[in-house]
Length: 549
Image (cartoon, rainbow, N blue to C red; front, top):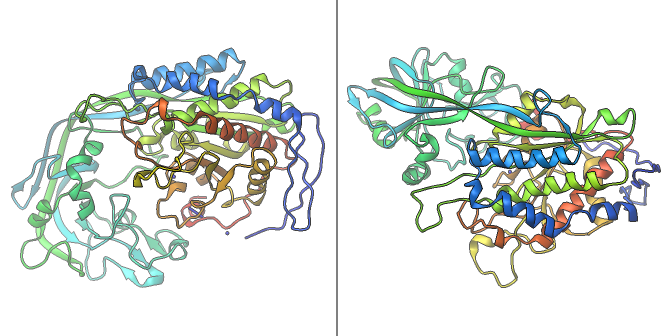
């Protein structure tokens, strides 16, 4: 769930019946947003009681944790769609429905064989596949962390030829992912140039150099936690689950294995190992073959439009979204509670978006622009739903002028709370706002000034930074909209002791705080719909975005 060309812009004053967004210039050239009594009354349709009513259903045990895919997630999608239909929203999914269908590919293991110099290993305990079912026997070449960064004189393949061979990569640097992170000292600027020419990550460099496959040796952090996290990679029956992808959605192109240090020792031998600071041929061959049973399981995003009133501007859309999935159940969990209800994550965002929709339905006037609503599936599995929607949009994605994302807005830290796991929770009148100042001057101004002119909550910009070590900007659905060049804002109240735990229950939600946040988001969206011109992306983008656009 990262972050500058400041372009001078002119803020204009205009009055329309639907909105009282009035921009003027004060001495410091700040936008000034005026919230009218009529707009306040519209926002007041969003209430703590209604939020609680919706969340009590969506985060109930009956939804069984809303895993992607699952019957509980499907029931939640139907619940959302029923309300949208009753309220008169326009379906914007597939074939005139509220649902954008996508498929999850689930593989159940039949057999797996990894052979390293004649030694065999146990799938799940010693290794898992990340992609690909077959790797023909090929020589193993150790290439350290696998990176190439021309500006730093880094080339992991220096002195070795990896064509038609298997590359072995490893790094002890801490990483939130699996593949080795950037080498120490490599900055955003070093990887801002053309990928494959100025720099290359381990996967792309191996492919460029003609390797047959990649073997990633577990870092110490992963190996120490392997017993607890291997289920994430293996699924229920030592299988693999993933969004069904095709050539337009980037899956790894080379077969890739993640292996333990036990396997690594068999790959090396002699006096060298995977901690060497030199690349070399190991003198061993390896091969891999996996046989699985494959299921294609349907799931869906939920998509709707509230049409605007302006004959021209209604073709454009302000998007509001949240992920409505969570992580399901765990029958092996300690204690009696086996259901991860996900009341805060992200039941709070799910019902927040639903309440914004209800407030629009209750409004006596329509916004100038249209409003696009998307409830994303599969965020917990790797931003699946938002990735799919942005690759295969059911609307003209270029007409989306901004995306407002809501993910975990339901918790508050009490003054006497000494639990270290709650230290980053926001207070009762505080919320983290991420991304608003990162891409668009206008979007930042509207976001700030709407809040200042309404609830005046404490907007904490602590994480509104591309160098935030938590990387929250990259960890929720707004990220895939930003990749598409759409400016975003993300509201978030912080992680806590019940994050991804069965204790994330409805009774722990601060509904009065949720009410304030959701009302403010509603008015932020309303003011964005009233702009004469769409917010421009006028700031230098983080490399992770700029090289994708």
